Length: 77
Image 1 (cartoon, rainbow, N blue to C red):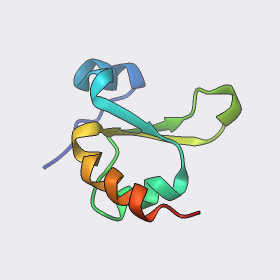
Image 2 (cartoon, rainbow, N blue to C red):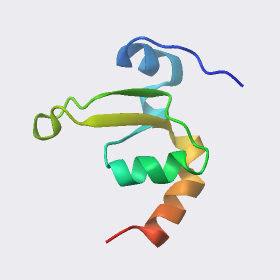
Image 3 (cartoon, helix red, strand yellow):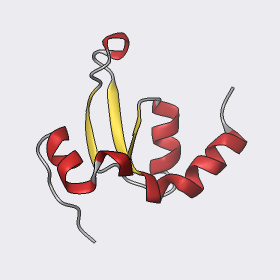
Image 4 (cartoon, helix red, strand yellow):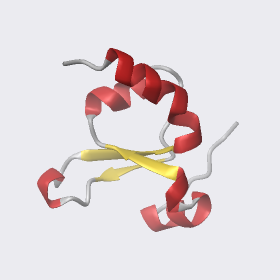
């Protein structure tokens, strides 16, 4: 299955709907998800002032439900 190549975050929102996406900017959590085969639909620099210059990955909520439960159970301290 190939993913769409969307150029902007607004394109991603228009395609998937903002309510169907979850932004993850904690690198350990991104690695946890991707190591379990869940790939982000979009990656960009964070728009939050406190996180400027940091990576944020946008995942589909429907794909992250199982991984999020496992993340909560095994979250690094």
